[in-house]
Length: 618
Image (cartoon, rainbow, N blue to C red):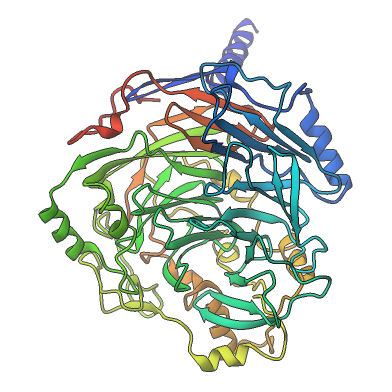
């Protein structure tokens, strides 16, 4: 009996040690430490407040609180010497504080601005970096009801309210961003799978719902404009994929837009030309977050498959996946301050451009703009990710991993035949790479022709794709990892049953959304209906993408392990931002934490540096 007591006590002790929230962690550059005095949250925070907020949201039919998002901005000057401002939402509240960094304690009793909303909750926000001044900031806020508000937290003024009567869109705002380089245009995505381009100085046209006409259509997306005598909001309406748009991000050169959706697809678009440049999919489940590398060479996404997916802009394929989280990944972000660079002469750079710069529309990519500013080439990227498992993971992506040819980790047996999936996915105009195992067996994704477009667009005034039963998320939810690496435990069996597939709530939201069509004319399967469904995802059959460059098997690409994987919160993490002297994390409890970087010079200026794993063991 005594032995049993000792065994139980030891087990509890081990579990508590493993589940302890970390206050520091070590990387190759030193020790990152949590700064308790630099913690930002709502003033007079109460224990159990999150539960109360969730109950209030459920009573209003809004479900649980939206994720806590964080936005930073630096003012040109400040009398007190603190130019940084931090904005974050929590429940029905929105806070705007003076951020004092790692050296001074936060003063939660004196927010610059605080707003409490009734009947709706803020879901996301963004600040226009072009129009900021010491006396004014243009802050956009999206809400659960689909409205968008423009406020000035410094002057404490309310500018305009867009989609006030919800005649444009009735579903929740998932992401909102100012267009890079524009003082008045902003892009908004919704759960309905639609994005809208607004102009800050244009009205929404009164109580009359907008009437749309097709402007351009491609594989998996369509663009619509308003039919009106005068310019009105929205300027454009994008219909993307099959399911909610969860996140989007502009490339550093501002030419390209990466979008992740609940259908499990990552789509990279040339925003100005409105063309699909690349496509990738999750292993299963929806994708929830996306980001670009500082040089625009990589796009990283995370989602319900618990994996970090790395997509190469030059190679137009998934080059690696990262395994370390045990729950859905909510945010991925690159750390530009610890990314290692090495110098490269102009001759080798020009030869590299000639060999590797190939895209579907003849555009080289962001490197054309960025390489003119700096002669340094990234040799080791630092990437961070957070998830609902309350863990923070740091990854390093090196050249030897990213440049491995496709299919280098060959399977023990490869099935080839009429029923097997295609070996590669090619976009119109792209030449096969040397890593392709069979360049003759290629699935080409090209824009649809005019006849298909006219057959889909009837006399209806709007169009949105319906949520078909053959979506990638639903068809892949029952799949398992075929060959697991020895000694690794993915912990995905118990997690897979919790997927939020595209049915129920999403279907009801899409049916109630204003101006939604693309309705199928026949329930019986036919060539035309199958072809129209293929336009939603951009491929002939989503299931056929397994084993292609758009969705390689786990044994066909490098599988990364995190350098650091630490529990840093009691609640699921919702925000991750890298700053020069610290990194910022936020959790669903509305607590924004500051982690001070190691003292000393930043390693990202080091030339010809070789990354090391010393001091990064978990």
